[in-house]
Image (tube, rainbow, N blue to C red; front, side, top):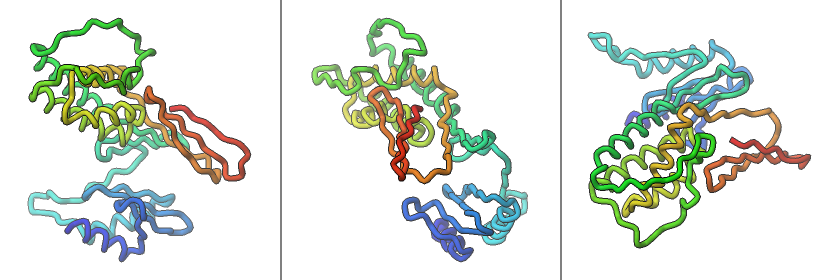
Amino acid sequence: MFYKKLVAALKSYGFEFNPYDACVANKTVDGSVLMIYFHVDDCKISHTSAKVVDEIISRLRNDFEVVFEDGSGAMKVNRGKRHESVGMSLDYSHKGEVHISMSRYVEDLCDTFKQAQLTLDGGFIEVKKRSRSSTQLTAAPKNLFVVNEECEPLSDAARVMFHSIVAKGLYFSKHGRPDAMTAMSFLTKRVKKPDRDDWEKLKHLVKYLESTMSLPLILSADGSDSRACSLVTCDGTIIIISLLSACHGSHVRVL
């Protein structure tokens, strides 16, 4: 019901919704795009003019704000170069770039895994492996796609924990850590019947995340008329190839 009301209100303000994302709407004001995206009742609004932003905030406040006797319910407005949104820290302080960090979310996942490991230590045999430096770590081990059908399955308790941790990882990998997507893509397919090997692969990912806790996703645009495609290698490296429409060449960025 709230979604329908918000959509109706934004349309009445003259916004048009993005055909690919039902939670993003745009409107051209004074020659620049006024964009609003929302998650439930949390909205992010951007425009080149602070006055235009003030006006849309005022309209939203008039239509949706309900202040109770104890003062609760008042709309909270956060301005500036840094924002928190659905677990992401958005940093616009770098010219022409936005840095997306999910370090607190990643830290929570690592802590959850450690707790699960402690809980299940009695049922696991620690496998001694040659240690690797943080510079050698990758999000996915070399044997990521190797499945041993004879490997010992996890207990019911371990399977539930495995599923929960992988679900957490799927969320942050899609929002701010695409370098973990290859590993997560495999692990999500193993949640129904995970085995000991799968737990070790998850452990490998957690160790990588611990060593890259504060690694941000950096997005930027140079204003050129270009199309972009992305490639993900088996170790989780993201390669973005921007192909200029005029075919003058290609630009490659490795994240």
